[in-house]
Image (cartoon, one colour):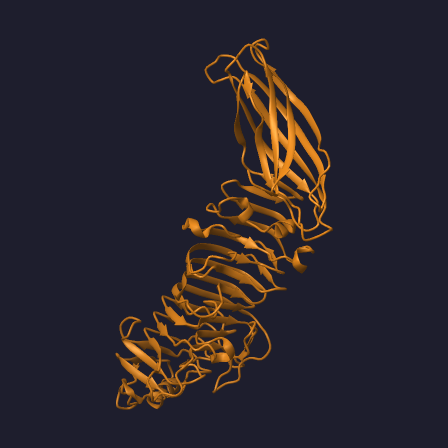
Length: 538
């Protein structure tokens, strides 16, 4: 059974002029009185509402517009600071096929600054949702305590969904574990004109946002604010309609501890994809993001300053080359770079094959505080048990017999932190490698396998001690030592412009002039600097 708000019994006009609030409310009251819940149908039209539609503390109230989401059934909101539709305390309820517009015109004094609200009360507030709706609110920086206009706000109404929607507002979506929204520079507490929202803090989770586009008006607020959420799945698009006013560059802001967030999205216009609130956690989250067309690509992509990150799986693509020279995951310097990072990362995997080199995959102070983390880049590496290990087996041509030269087999960014006088430390570089001589078709070859290490101390001034080198020949195989014979290797380490470079010189003798010589091996790097870790470059 469907109840039509334009039936004479209710009398909604849908002409964009007459206030239809009372007529719509009458249809809802009638639907609530039925022994079985009925769908409330809105034919095409512009429904001007001067007061918030009360859909609170009910079960099974479902509102349906006509046709698709765009300009078929339009709610024109003149409700001021109250939401156009208020579902606070309702369960198994929601709406679909609506356009939500703010009222405009010289005679209008109180255009709506909140689209739709869901919230938990003492009477309920679970299993609700919204689908195929379009929101177009105004740019109003001072509304809602500094949040600006809000498309949809949900306070602890769990097991919730948003499917196939387009939401345009200063802050398109807020999901929060408390009515008070704690964001820097904001003073806002959600409320309802009809019900008292659940007090204190609680769970805010099990939310599916699918096929949805969140588009901010100006650079004022993030597209999605998450406060104390768990089990949120987002699949869709985040961007800004306009980006000329304001300073915000964050697409998704997690104000406090976040668990089991999954984002599969293309994010445009914003420079920063995700910001984790300080002194909070980010646990078992997955980020599959295409970061593109940033208005000003000057920030890191993921900021975890002073946060605990555990079990993160981040896969970031940056298709535009000019936007790649920035950190993928970052912790800002602590105390001006004189102290260790307060946050850390563990049991995580960060993937970005478009980063120019490894110095942009993670900030060095955060790597220092990382444990059991894999970095999938063009030169992949991992940090486990306090050691950084390259995950590629480099093969490097060292010249030919009779014309051999020293080759660079490993480069790393120094851990030195000039801002601190307590940043001295050591480097221990371990190699496991092969020197092979002879071409594939020469019929003769020589092979030497070895392990080696280099140890040196480096001081905050930038000076370092003479290196100590140990080379252990593990095995050697040669068919004709008079033709080709590998006698050993020489290792060296130099520092220049903040980069350490390890060189290897193979010592090969014999009459096989012109035979090629190669180095093949992998590297581990151990260090103990107070603030930073070195980062392997190649």
